[in-house]
Image 1 (cartoon, rainbow, N blue to C red):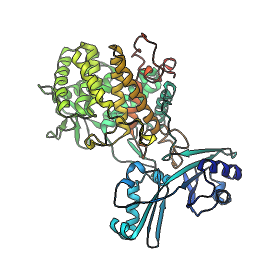
Image 2: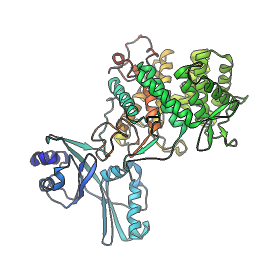
Image 3: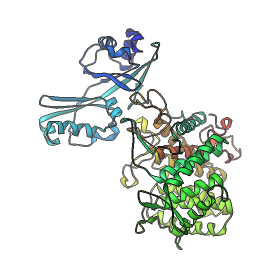
Image 4: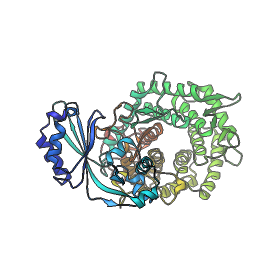
Amino acid sequence: MLTKTDPEALHRAIAERAGVDTPASPVWTCLRRDGRTLLSGWVRQLPLREIITALLAEDAAAKANALEIAIPGASTRVDPTTPGPFANVNRGRLTYVFQYGRAYRAVAPTTTVATNRNPQKERDRFAEAQGIGLDALRDSGVTRVAPTTCLLALADDDGALTLRELYRGNEIVAPGRVTGDEAARMLDRMLAWARANQASDGRLPYKYWPSRGAYADSDNVIRQMLATLGLVRAARAFGSDDLRTRAAANLARNLTAYLVDCGDHAAMTCGGKGKLGATALAALCILEHAGTTGAHADTLANLRAGIDRQWQSDGAFRTFFWPPERNDNQNFYPGEALLFYAVLHAHTGDSDVLARAMASFRYYRAWHRQHPNPAFVPWHTQAYVRLYRACGEPELRDFVFAMNDWLCGIQQWGGNLAPDLWGRFYAPAKPAYGPPHAASTGVYLEGLGDAYALAAETGDTARAERYRTAIRRGLRSLRQLQVVSEADMFYMQQRTPVHGAIRTEAYNNEIRLDNMGHAMLALLNLPAWTVADPPATGAAAPARAARTAGGDRTQGAG
């Protein structure tokens, strides 16, 4: 407890980290107990020693095991009508101060993190409370921003103190930190999350909001099936009976919840929409879990009939069973269907499946050249690498490399980018590509793992190294977003729904199942050498049987 902590030692540690002993601005303080706020507020300019002594004398300090403190630096006046100062990228980095007449509100960076409200929302809330518009706030009020040092003091039951400096309510994961051992730990945490959060009927929760401590009512069948596929592959990679049982229960639950029997075929549906992508992923889960003759064999045959039904003679796919007029999501669903075809061919050697897949490859290669989008790349990469291994067509290899060379160009690294955003994939000049997102990073890494393996297998060492670099950077981004420590959870009262899970972005703490599903699949698909030290010159390509940073701890150590 904080009351068992030496106030002078705490003061010295905070003053040293903050680089100031008497702040020039009010200081935000918050006493917490396991994430719950006990006492909070702004303290006027006083020496830090006096602030800390007064805080530890409060009754709340006897229960508190965390002290959150934010010390603003010099502030700058900004125009509240311009978006720049209120962009999401500044959430959790700046203190915002709004004044209008006698009304005053200051918002600490840790507050915008803990509430998951962006700075624009805080600005609008202040203006609405005063009954004014942004123009009035600009013309007759004052809006200021200040860079802020944020610290978190954690105390155990004996008063032993840990002081951490927070950046956007988190700690920076250093470049190069995610080696094989850490990648294995990332995967272990995700599997621990799945074990802790799987319901008795096999279900995994779709979405959770840590700031509200609430689950969303929404659902998404494709994202549910991604997690199923992750469990299926993890069970195989680790040879785990427990994971296999969990995967079987999750698969059975999802088939019960979303499968629609259409007579001569079946489809997966959610919210009244029958989706090719969900149908293909369900079929893939059954195929990889039990093969063509095991559990759910009849369902697999019906799902395959549904996928075949959506395939067109020119190689294109219709992407929705219903509403039948819909044919969008071409960047996603056909790639998922092609991955199923590629894995099915590997299981059966069916020449008709290969012929269909190759026709679709040629159709969608031309389509992607006309409509380039990064979302297209990982699914088609995974399908075409498998097809290349089956038939050796050089055009498959060449297109895989062309797609992933281009994808690497939208990965962000270094420069003026905030350090917690390094390694994500985002093209600000191309808003049609969508916002940065943990699920996007995860699925891109799934494809890059196969692209890396293909480059290594074909002797393209320079390209393999380029992909390996991109993979390691992307893993750094995912590790930054994984909820791991007390520092990550300083404002979260419920720990089970979040520990080991993947947040959506550094400035958005929403937990979503596909964030974890894609990250898990990426880690399971990465050759160990992509995250450990590279093999000696002339060494053989990594064994694809392991397919996991956690499945071969000796090879994966780094």
